[in-house]
Length: 369
Image (cartoon, rainbow, N blue to C red; front, side):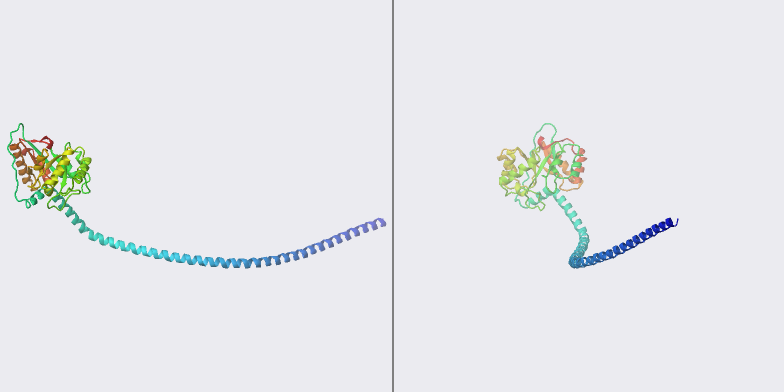
């Protein structure tokens, strides 16, 4: 038993010694690993510091460059901002100046507009009295007043009266004329900036005329493209053809003003020749006592119609009615008469209610005379 125990004890001691040796080796290995790791880590840190220092120098250089660039950019930004601010201030100042100017203009414009309106009204009134004023002024330039009285003529049926309304230009005039309950002869201006819609207005009537502007001896409110006594045949033809293209259905023309033109023999020859060639008919508004329309019409063997009376020498309704009665008397004596009026509200309102004064005559278009 003792030998067995002794053997066991020896085996046990051997195992313990093996364990101790293993543990010592393990500790030594761990210590060695830690030491080597420490040196490796130290070497890594040293290398890293070296690299970091080099990178730091590079970064510092780059940072210096970037800061310089940033400073330059900031300077540019500041300069641009200063320019923008100065522009904004300049714009604000300009706006203030404009506002002040506009305020001043508005204050000044109010009386100017009123003046313009009154001038336009005067122009319109003068325009509607244009033929009458032209005739009155023309008397100063004629040595003898030529008043040809129409001879009494025998005629069949009722005497005929043609009433022409000159200077028709605007819609309110057209509306009033449409209320007249018998035949009327509206004479339209060729279109211009002052009255651009005359072509369309003329189509609202079964019969219409052209009120062609001719040169006056003394008239300050002339129409656009007024024919002058000094114009050549080519100029007159061009103007007549232009009007004919605008109003192809209209064949009868009467003159707007024209005391200088119609009293000029050469000018009337040119005009009536052109009109004859174009199969157009001229009606003399007789804005001058020295008109040469009659002489030229005989030379060219052209039928001529002329005004007998103005309806509205005065714009008072009583005076217009008196002139209308005179026109009826002339028609009854000579078989027909031509009366010319203008689109004053009084003239048109008298004509709307004129049936009592038109007994014994037949109202006609000028192409029925």
